[in-house]
Every structure is written in structure tokens, then in C-alpha cells.
Length: 178
Image 1 (tube, rainbow, N blue to C red):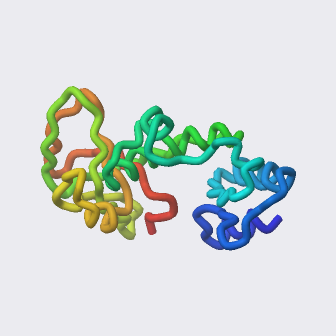
Image 2: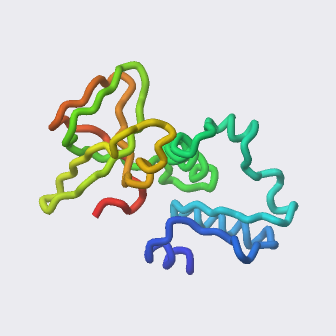
């Protein structure tokens, strides 16, 4: 099975871009296999019979999925909500990204009343413990903070400010700790 070997070699997703798939049976087999591996397929479906109006552009579908217009907000929303939903739709039993615990190395301001996903840099130390710090400015238009991050600091709905040394939940970008 080539997809399993590719995943083990570090593949993050699969695509048919460059050589478009034009066989519905092959596409279905690829989607099922990817789902069983917890992987995503990006289909460059030029053949209208394969896409069945399943394309994603800005509009009603992206709005229904909660994908806002700026790139950072879209990436965070995709990682936290859309990717798990797509994996579930593909039949994967591993849909929710694991939340790890890390010690904050800086104070983080947060008002209770909403869940926040802040971009962070998680470091794994020789003894196995994890520490995390933010990437700095968390503005929704600051794309460089997303490029620097290797995970999201998940601050729960009722949680307030975080002090240096507090434990926080982190959602890693796949394979980023090491």
C-alpha cells in the first residue's frame, strides 16, 4: 500500500494535482484508504462527474463551515474544526487532534467567556516535558505568527489569564514536536 508507506515517510496529505484522477472508483478507493490512515486528500477534480459540486470557494459552503476571510483565521478554523469533520466524513476513527499539556514560559492575557486558539511554539525537552510560548502578536492578520508556530495554545471558554509556569493545552501541527 503506497499511501501507508508515504505517510510513514512523512507525507502530510495526498493530492492528484499535476495528473488529475478521472476514475470515480480509484478516487473512492483513495479517499477510503486516506481516511483509514487519518490523512486528507486534496482532489484537483477537473472532471465534473467526480466533484459533484464539492468544490470549496468563498461563499455559502465556506461560511457554513465557519471559514472566515483572513488566512490565519481560516488556518486555525480548519485545523480545529474542519479537518476533524473531513476525517470523520472519510470514515476515520481518529478525527480530533490530540491535546497535550505544556508549561507556559510566558504570561498570556485571556478574558473568560470564549475559547481561544493562540499560535505557539512548543518545545520538547530532553526529559520529555513540553514548554510553550506564543509567537508574539496574535492579530488575525499576522500571517508570520502562523508560519513560526508549530502548534496552537488552546485556552478554554472559562479560562482567564495564564501565568508563567501554568499548564495549558496545546494542539500540535501534525509531527511538529521533536
